[in-house]
Length: 160
Image 1 (cartoon, rainbow, N blue to C red):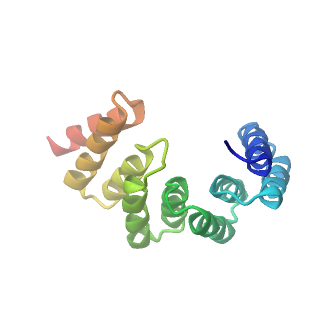
Image 2 (cartoon, rainbow, N blue to C red):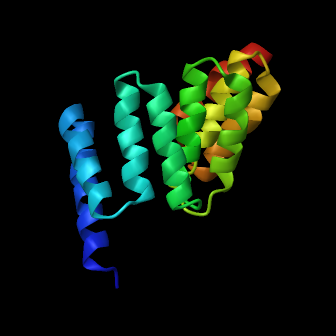
């Protein structure tokens, strides 16, 4: 059974996530911060970083993900998110390793995201064979994923 502070922290994180998805960034950040003050969790750090990324605050978003990893190295989302933020900054070589770590993280949903992101990275570099492998990996993790199917169709058209 989880203790009361963890339950309260996770409830604040869930409320913050709902606000974030509704576009209320300031409210979301406040709820994530309250969650972290109640009890630090990898989820709250990661999602506060995600909120920062929506504001273009990528260095701060990366720092939040690093705190998440320090809190729970098994949680895969911050690894993937760091990879995305590095891609957004044009730091593709640095992003690859973060996606690879996300792919093997013990606790991660949706597990196919780092495959999709690494596929996009390889495709952007013209490494079509490597991109195909990643999109196939995404489908192995999440059969029928429409994003992976779309990319695979486009890449197969380019390869043929």
